[in-house]
Length: 300
Ligand code: NAP
Image (cartoon, rainbow, N blue to C red; front, side, top):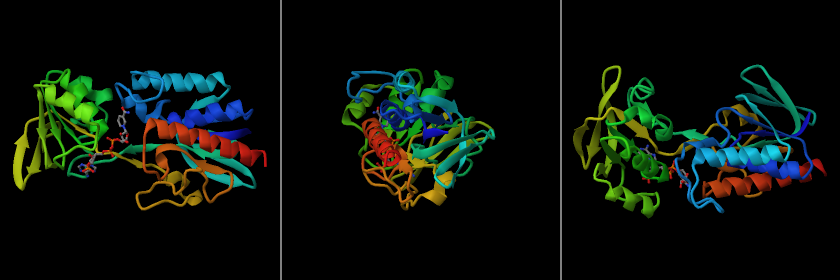
């Protein structure tokens, strides 16, 4: 029986673990994919306080190392259900493993949003991808497209431009949501073409992607690419926890800056929470707030 079970090992969950351990609580962090969460997909992070420039993987490793140095225990498991009997919470994992705790911090993050065009799911891994850091190397010397206008899309396009012959950056508006500095860096790259006011409407090719069709200013245009990286944001993945939460229209947990939920003993932190700014720094801040709230609740 742990004092606190933390579901999700990204910056929110690992920061919560560090704070809770330092408050003397026993903590288990359960992560389904990679400790560090979404940030492990980022080749370079330059806006986390104290780090001038660090790779997302390295930052994830450091967050994990820090939490474990304070005494946090960790498990690589996918949580599929959350139940409560009396004041004891139990999480069930897809492997069949179960863990119990007196309080739970949900820091489950969010997963990539899909475009919703025909054959998208079928072509995942055969030309369509959601993580340029993970899969970009497969497209060395080839033409690729990135869809999106936020920091993820801009960073993906920059990364791919280093190894791909051509990178088409497709965005539905004529200005970007992401940082101007990244846009400027992309403008300097000769092998990057901006395709603005454009939406991907078709995925071309047979078993493997050979191109995309976009609708730009009302006209159809075909672009030959072997890879399409979709970077149009994320959506939370809270289905397994639905009975215990209220959620907003977009599916995010409806909890305020205090990270409290309507359910006693359950707290929410990071990108899965309804919030205005989803950044590493705000995820880490949530982790601290949720951990201290959970500690207060345990000590009540
Ligand atoms: P985001 O900032 O929400 O951007 C999503 C982009 O996708 C927007 O440009 C949006 O267009 C576009 N989009 C959304 N739905 C679409 C659709 N159905 N079809 C076509 N385009 C669509 O998401 P993100 O880039 O994944 O970033 C998420 C958060 O992480 C942000 O706060 C970002 O700053 C942060 N981040 C930080 C770093 C870092 O290095 N520190 C790296 C990556 C991300 P509109 O602009 O028209 O809405």
